[in-house]
Length: 110
Ligand code: HEM
Image (cartoon, rainbow, N blue to C red; front, side, top):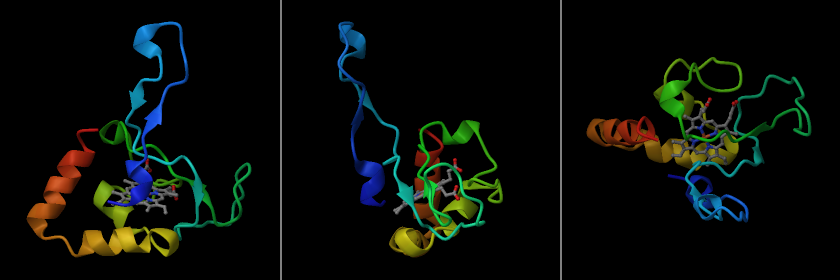
């Protein structure tokens, strides 16, 4: 799994202990990346080729995937990763069927 999704996110300071700098396992870096899913429609601050990495948290409750909904399954979404995320896709493609199923089960548990 790419380092981008391993970065810890936390809530901000809060006088309420339960909310104070608590870990948020969003599984995203929330940054703009060029991963080859371009449609040349510019959104906000993003360049023509960029999209903001969405949180993988809650993945099972949404879909179809990617900004334009062209990936029906999580498997299809991962296989669309290219350019900056090519190494992640390549490693996914090298997994055995059992390893892929384990990863997809993990992603569906977030
Ligand atoms: C094993 C590693 C990875 C997995 C399992 C993964 C999984 C996913 C999934 C399931 C989506 C679709 C989410 C949705 O539509 O709600 C997605 C989108 C995206 N991912 Fe990844 N990803 C990985 C690595 C990366 C890396 C390394 C980058 C950046 C360098 C990246 C950048 C993005 C971006 C920008 C999108 C949105 C693309 C669009 O909407 O067109 N991902 N990822």
